[in-house]
Length: 257
Image (cartoon, rainbow, N blue to C red):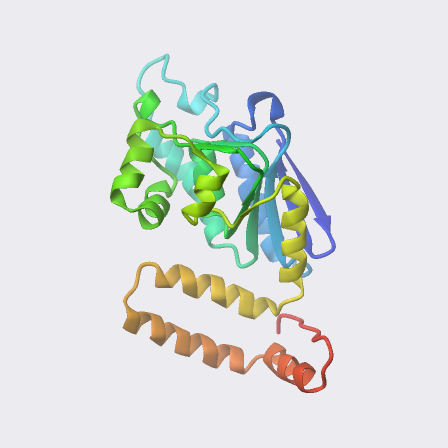
């Protein structure tokens, strides 16, 4: 249900169910999760792009998937989250390689949770972002509460979640939920990934990890972690190479060591 392409130091994962707007069944979620983990194990890979085929990034949960069908009685959606959605979102958040969302079209439900879990987000103009959960009697999930309340504040997050307000790309940009708007969104993501690929991998990994930590910890805890991180990076070969290249006025050759 996906395609996996490795181009230079970038992996492009494309959700490939355009006939259902890339709605995710259990198999697709597992394929994405395993692909992200595989890319993290590949020493040649330095960044990951996640996008969708066709007119949508993802419309979220495939309601025809057997694990969530409610027409035959109650279903345990908590189990679906624990075994399918949460592992997928955590594979993105815990990825040591930067994950870039190239949001090519509608982004809804838990598909929005997946997009928001990505480290960088670029979208085409006029893309519709919508939660949709309250329309079918559910609540936000797969980490969306954490993201939205920190970005929108309680009242606007509540409005988005309860009323199902649709936000367009420009509004998402103004709210700081995406990085930029570009009609050639995949090319924009490739350009950014190329910039990332030229940077020292250990530094990129540490910046991502420390910023995530800073969201939920005190100032004292943050500066303590920064101190440990900087000590670790100061011992790296990449730091030595970076300083040497700067002094010699040449491009650095980082190896992630």
